[in-house]
Image (cartoon, rainbow, N blue to C red; front, side, top):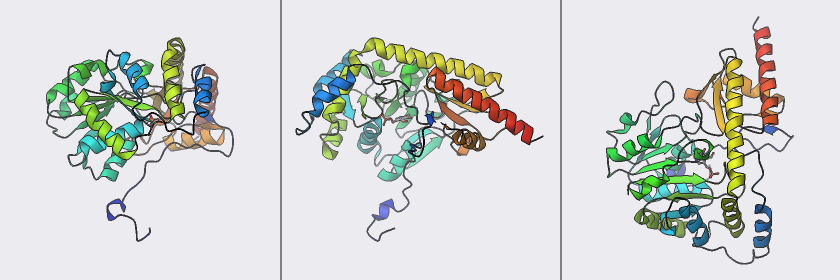
Length: 356
Ligand SMILES: Cc1ncc(COP(=O)(O)O)c(C=O)c1O
């Protein structure tokens, strides 16, 4: 550590994203990306903007904000954009959690505690129930802003909008941030609720359901006052945070409604197929409405299963802590999934044989 590092950052443990190995070709089922390419018109839209890269991007992003808002009957003043939803989250944490604190489930997106550490925000981790569901009543007495991923990260478990509304109503003077990174794979969005409640912000991303992880486009929806404050933070950090190619890609993707529906439907269908096959092999699989499954098997540890799959060219994710026994598998194409399932079956047979 240099002697120049800010004292406040000495203990910072940065977020560790899923591996993006370059050493060989893997079937990548580890970072919840889409297995499908972006919508057909995206490539040309990006090419057109590439010719104008000498010019800064639009610092207001109004056409895209308008298009995103229109899908929910909202205006551009209800939408803010970010370089991925990670950046949107960082704007929100700076604007609304700094100096206040935060609460989120003990099993959730690992970026939340990292952002809190970076910003010096004290946070409370609220244990999920034994079945990994959120108990809304556990938040009733919490007075700091609440952050929930829905469906939840790492588990895929989903909370219906009625329960989110209950959470929002527990305390109208407490902000609730709902991160809907995975909502398009079978859940219902809470965005319509922002018309009713000024203490709700909903975050979304184009990284998963719109196959644009590499483009980096996230957004949030809220009442005009909250968006104006989020925008003030965004402009203070980087007014050109969304580049012109990404803005064009996102607009094009929004207009390709049929393609979006086809891809998300296919992922939901492969998810159900994969869950059934895993259960038939003796896995416990958490009910997921996301583009991934969290699964464990009594015969093999999560770490060992992850290692043996990687050796054979399939990357999944393994986390420690309360979900140490599980692996998280991103839903790929049916073909990728069949390779994963066949290998998982072979590994289980091997492990059973080795353990006599
Ligand atoms: C719950 C959740 N929120 C946000 C993100 C960040 O997505 P992005 O920055 O690509 O929009 C992720 C990524 O995995 C996630 O799981």
